Length: 234
Image (cartoon, rainbow, N blue to C red; front, side, top):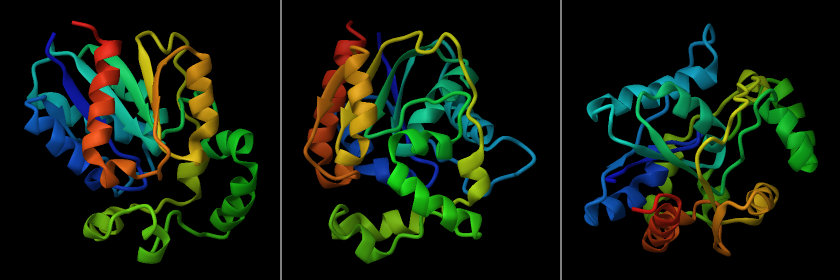
C-alpha cells in the first residue's frame, strides 16, 4: 500500500514548519503533501471547516483511491478528524506530533483550562482585551528554532484573536476509527502525550523543543517513518 503523507501545520504558524521534513521524505521517494491553511479567515464560516476544506482542496491533485496518513503538529492535532471527514481519500492513520488531541464539543480555551490553567489565565485576559496570539519575536524563538529557518517561521505566523480560541470543535462519535500515533517533543505537551500512551497508541518521544522538526529533520523523519510503518504495516 503506497501512502501519501500529509503534513499539516498549526493554524497559528505556517507550512514552513514542515518544509525540512517534507524534503527529507521526498528525498527518500515518499509521497508527501504540505497543505497551506488559510491565513485570512471568513468569519461567516467555522474556522475549523475552512482549514479542513483547504486541505481537501490541496489533495485534489491525487486520485481519491490513494490512501493518506494525516500528520498534525501542535494546534493541527484537533483538526485531524475534521480533515479526515472532509477528504474523499481513505485515511490510513493519524499521527500527532507534539500536538493537542481532538476535543470535539469544546473550544481551545476550554481545553487549555483542563491542560494548562496557568497559560489560560494570562492568555484569555490578553485575548479578551483584543490581543492576538502568537506575536512571537526572534528572541522568543531563538532557543528552539535554528537561526537559518527562524525568519521563515516568523514570516509565516498567523496571529489569531478570541473567536478562533473560543470556537467549539466538531464532535465525531466514532473517532478514532483508525490507528493513531503520537510523537512528543516538549514538556508542554506532556498531558496529551500521556493520554496517547494510555490509549495504547504507537509512541515515540524526544527531549527537545516544540519545533524539533526544524532542528533535526532527519531524526524526526526517521521517527515518523517508523511510526507510520507500525500503524500501516504492508
